[in-house]
Image 1 (cartoon, rainbow, N blue to C red):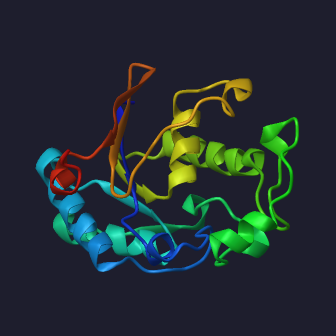
Image 2: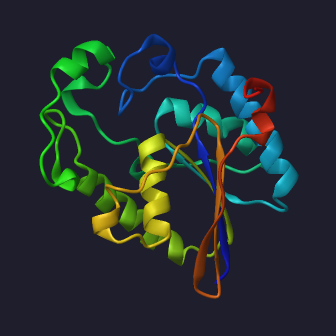
Image 3: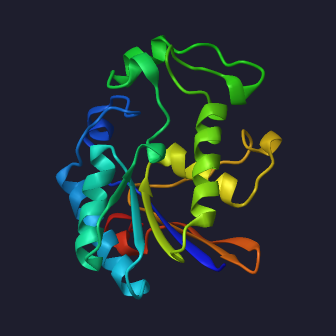
Length: 207
């Protein structure tokens, strides 16, 4: 089945401007983040025909980003805990300077490194997202918008293109707030059509 995924990283959140760890902390968007979300909704409405399936992390900053998209397409938001950012454990919501002091030394196998007490390892995030991708493969809708978080979307892209495990710690993607990335599957072949597209936010990325 042909399928297109439209990946959106949430807009600018207060944790970013105030310098504290996001993770599973439930923070809202800044005013600028809300503007980014509106611009993203307009962009998606320009390139998607019909009514897509709209999935979002259940954390507030993602839901606030998904809200104008839902209004544009007149669809409901499907909230999914599976799409949350990587959990940072005891430092969730803590100022980054203090959190850095509590970080555990990196282990040889980065996939199993747990940087903080109660945090997810990359393998645990990877397992969570791999299951989500398996679910996506089975849904009937062929156009799916996914609003989520930086590291979650990195893992999603890695799993979508079937990146081998030993390469996952070595291959990363830069995804800015409210960037758009598009993934497709046609006749069994999976592609990255665009990555970290910021055309709809040109005014804040002028050189």
